[in-house]
Amino acid sequence: MKKVMIVDDEIGIRENIRSCIDWEKEGFHYCGDAPDGELALPLIQEWAPDILITDIKMPFMNGLELTSIVRTQHPDIKIIIMSGHDEFSYAQEAIRLGVTEYCLKPISAADLIQMLHKVSKQMDEEHQRITSRTITKEKLLADLCGGLIGTTDAIESAKQLSVPLSARYYTIVIIDVRLTDHSPDPESLMKKLLPILEETRDPHVELLPYIRSRTELVLLLKYNSDDSINVYLEQLRGRVRTELEHTFKCNLILGIGSQQERLQGIHVSYLEAEEDKYITRLTLQNRASLREINLGEHTTLFLDRNSFLEFLKIGSPNLRDPFVQEFAAPLQSFDWKSSSYGFYLLNDLTLESFRLANQLFRMSDHSDENITSLQQTIRKITCWADCTQYLCSLLNLLWERRAACSGKYSDVIDQVKAYVSREYNNEQVSLKMISAHVRISPSHLSKIFSQETGHTITEYLTQIRIGKAKELLKTTSNKTFEIAYKVGYNDSHYFSNIFKKTTGFTPREYRTQGTEESQARPSDMRKEPMYE
Image (cartoon, rainbow, N blue to C red):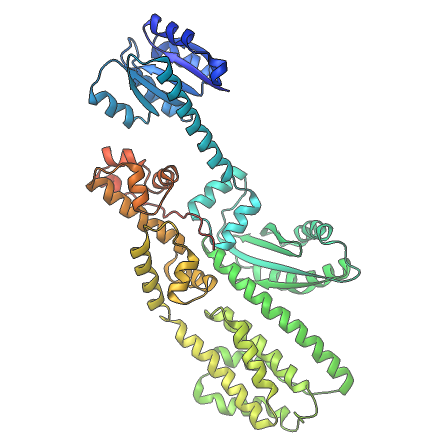
C-alpha cells in the first residue's frame, strides 16, 4: 500500500482531500499533511511517502522549491503538482524539475483518484523493470565474457555487488570437467574445485569464478603485474590440473585466453579461451592415441616440435623448403601405409601450430573447420614427399592468416557501421542480424569488432542511437516517447535511462538546458543487451 502526503497552505483543501477519499479502499495510506514546504521537509524525512501532492503557491517555501529539494534528497518519491494558476511558466518549471503529474485546481476526488492510480501503476512498472534487470555476480561475469555489458554498467553493477572488478590486466580461463565413473557428482565436484583453486592461486592473482554449466567453470583472473601470470598459468595447466584430476578422479581440459587491459577485452579473452579449450581437447585425445600406438609399435621417431613452432614465429618463405627438409628428415624411412603413428604425430604438430598462431595473431573462428580439413589431408599422406608438402602447406596457411589479419577486417567494420547507421531505428536489430548481413558468425564478428574498434557492437549501436536522439531533441518538438521510438527504443523509460547514463542529462534536461559545453562532455558509450 503506497503512502500519500499532502502539502497545501489552505487547510480546507487538505481536509477535503483527506476526507473525500476512502484511502484504504483505493489501495493507499494517507500518512499526513503540512501547510508549507518548510514544515513538510522533516515530515517527509520521517514518513517517507511514496507520492507527494503539493501546491505551488505557498508561503515560506513554495511547491517548486520543495520539489527541487525532494527530487535531490528523495529521487524515488513521485510528485504531483497542484496549481490554481493556469500559466505555462509553472508547468514548464515543474516538468523541468521532474514532477510526475501536473494538474489545476480545483480537482475532483474522482480525477485525483484516477491520477493516483496512474502514478501507482507507473511506480509498479518501474519496480518491475528494475527487478527484472537485477544482476547477480554470476550474471555480471557471464555478461562480461559474452560481451553483453558496457564498461560503465559493469563498474556500477560490480560496485552494487561489492565485487572488486578493477585491475590492470584480465585473463579468462575455462575449465571443462570430464567426469569418469569414479568422479563425484558434478554439483559437488564444482563446489570442491573452487576452494582448491583459490588455495593454489598465485598471491598476486585474484580469481573471480562463475559456474557456466554443470561441467564447466570459468575463471576471470585479475592481476596488476604480468611478472608472475605466465608461471601461474603454466602451473594451472600442468601441476595444479594434474593434482585436481588425481584428487577428484576426473579429466580437466583448460582453455586460456590472452591478457587484456580493458574490461571490454574480457570478451575477447573468453572467445580465445573457448578456442584454446577446443584445441587442447583435440591435443589430449591425439596424444593418448600416440601413447597407445607407441606402446604397441615401440616407435622411436622424434620431431623437434619446438623448432617448427619457432620457425612458424620468425621464419620466412624463402627458407621454408630447406627447413622443412631438415625438420622432417627423421620421417624419411617411415612406412606411412602400415602405421597410423605418422598421422597422430603430424596432427599433434598441427594442433600446437594452431594454438601458437592463435596466441601470436588473430585467427578466424573457423579453426575447427581448418583443423578437420588438415586432418583429412594428413590421412592421405603415403610417402615422405607428401609429408614435406603438407608441412610446407601448413606453414603457408598460417603465414597467410598472419599477413591477412592486418587490415583484413576494415571492409567488415565499414559494413557493420553502415548497417547500424541505416538500421539503428529498428528495435529488433541484433548481433545475429548484423552478422547475417556481413556473413560472419556472431561470435567472430563480436571478437573482431571489439579488437579493431575498442568497443562492442552494442556500444556502437547505442552511441549512434543516442547521437540521433540528441539531434532530434534539439531540432524537433517531438515528445520523448516519439524520439525513443524513432531511434529504436519501444520502451521510453528504458530510453530515458540510457540517455541519462550516456549524456549525464535526462532527455528533458538536455532539450531545455543542454549547452554546447554539456554536449561536449565525454560520454561513455552504453550498451543495451543484444541477445541472439
